[in-house]
Length: 377
Image 1 (cartoon, helix red, strand yellow):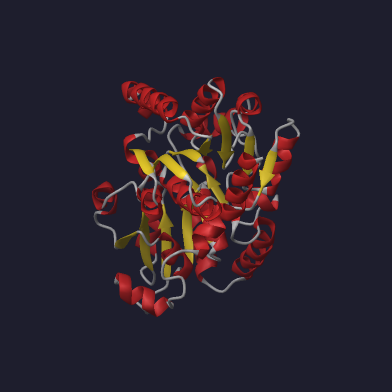
Image 2: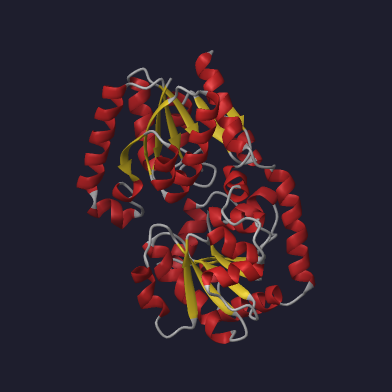
């Protein structure tokens, strides 16, 4: 059968590559074309566009890249019709993927959506489009499964792909000593991992606040997990004058061996928890109190910004969102996570419960098996 997959971000490339492995294990004659990245390319198939040439995030980026966006839609529509797959599989990235779902549905191409758009957090109006044009929706959290079902949508829950990515990470069995020696870190200092996001705006507002802690904790080594979409040049203007290191392509390994982490809200909060690393969730952006008010009253429709708290439906990790952040609060929380405190121990106990909620690895293969069997039927 012919499969056409669209992933528009680094995380989509990772999860897309695992899904492709699952599809190929169930359909040895699968013909796969895709928009994705290096990880998907390494599995096989035919790449149409790399996500680095398509990723546009944020209002300003959209406004300044309208021509690029139109061209990408044009190329995708034409290529989809010229190759007419048995199914179009979309991975997250709703700004691009939902319009493509509408186009494919209009032209009689079956649409499966893997990693459902987070309409439960914002832009709930997208649910109407999903119900109309998506033939099969795959969710990755139990709470969102029940959310979509109440709208009458055909929902499949097969687990969370982060578990697959974590279980299949390279150097999964190495010790802390082996890791530090391999990437050039000090053995006698606790590691504080800094996950500052994969967008320029996230770096601009969150990394400076994280680096203030690096200046206060000389007994620790602060290490930035370099985002796949960035190079060292993207970090240079922020880290000048600060005693920090950067490691690329080692995020899971870094978090696994860190004493604790400061994490910009997103999937990384869940991954950090699944790797059993105590964390502080930080999310700062432009606009100060006005942005804080608008986000909480207008745009954010859920009580928490971290996937850890959303899945447990309580505050397991502290969220310093916009006005909730102060240097003093950050410093106190970090002290509690570095030391052996009841706060740290409770968080680790909450993580154990989260593991039960999320389930074990194998999500990508279970989803792929369901897709192949549904297509055969």
